[in-house]
Image (cartoon, rainbow, N blue to C red; front, side, top):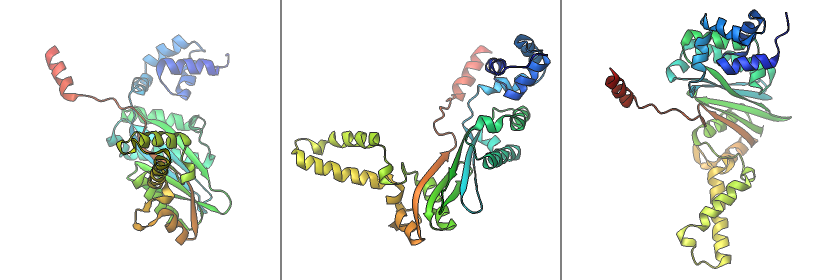
Length: 289
């Protein structure tokens, strides 16, 4: 029997929405004939997953793992269609399996981590629960020599990994908690993209009180407001959420550490959710009956 090519698997996945392993198995059983594979899939429950693959999965969970010595950490986002499913023990177990696999592989390549047994598990879970479930993204942070990774997950929906130079595990966790709550744009003022600064400067210059100001005065006002903007949006300059009398940088220093970077995941961020008007839907159905 001829070997099944990656392009055949890709085409069948695109035409059915099913997982890689299921498509490869169907093609093998069909002798590589894509049309026969689709016909066979229609005869079993396989296409149940395909029909759900197009539905928006914007709920779910964020899971983290950090090495005991704090040398590295990982974070994954696994999505479901509803919050109800995200609280299901089967979904939670699956999310833990994914986090463990990413932790073991130290890889952000979700497709590679899922290739094999985990994809089969995902497909089986889709069949069992009846919702589209997907592994959206993964992050891996290597702290570097002398540094540590801290973690914090809020409500299973917001996860943070923070890298500190020095410090201790409690401080790293506390700062991660701050990031989860306040959502700073960058870790340090020097990390702010120039594009953001240019955009903020344009906004400042367009404000009514800037009109007619001499150039040197206007520039001083702009720099002062940009400094305030950086303080409000940079993690190290923000008042620490657990003690607003000190900045995050000051809190880190008190523990013998310094904040270097962070990664923050929030479930569903950036996913365009389909807005459903249930009242309208019911009225339309009533009108057709």
